[in-house]
Length: 160
Length: 115
Image (cartoon, rainbow over all chains, first blue to last red; front, side, top):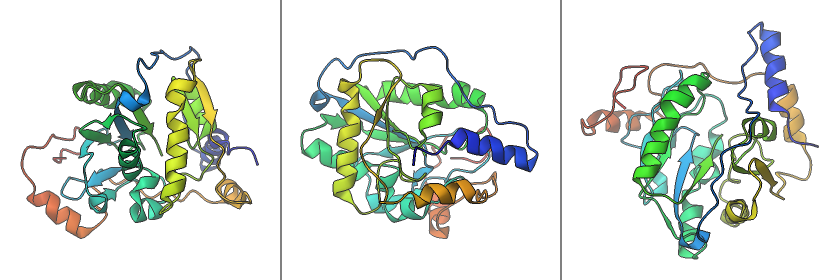
């Protein structure tokens, strides 16, 4: 079967529920582009994940357009990771966070020399934000600033 | 990474790698570290192999031999849970630890709780 058409599926279910059509982000222009200037094996990599990941001891995400972020130390104990998200089945993510926050996988790839190193922190959010304007104006600039502070050469984005 | 090809193609990030797995499994299946590693290594190759802005690399992994999970999704009901506006802890223990943690926390502009 071809990939699921999520946009059509959600358009249809909103229509069935009598909701106004969801305003998907559609960018017509080609994206900005920056070639990687050195091999991945020499890069400092950032990680951004939207699956609602937090570390026990941090305040959890809430579900109504939460545009806050959490800084997760990349040497975090995997067993201390938690999830809070309303729009996906968290069963497997709570059993093994690597399915939405590939921290053990990335640490392994650093040990193996595939990646140079990880930034000190990964950044996480609860991506179920229904306002693309608030993502653009509140969330994205915060993530950009924190990634620049951590002096990453590239960032891996892991949405849910 | 992407689990939703159509949404990613509409947004057009500079580079993307699509894994045709159910939502909530963007980087693999639970407790399958070799699969998780293979997925991520191939995805990370996109940093150097993709040279046309907006290209999506298709990763060659299948969730299962049949596509029942796709049919279930297309026919299933909307099972999202209510959008509560207070922090939603995975465990009560997490709530207690967060309440005890240090005061140097940013304030959430939506719910006015410290985060």
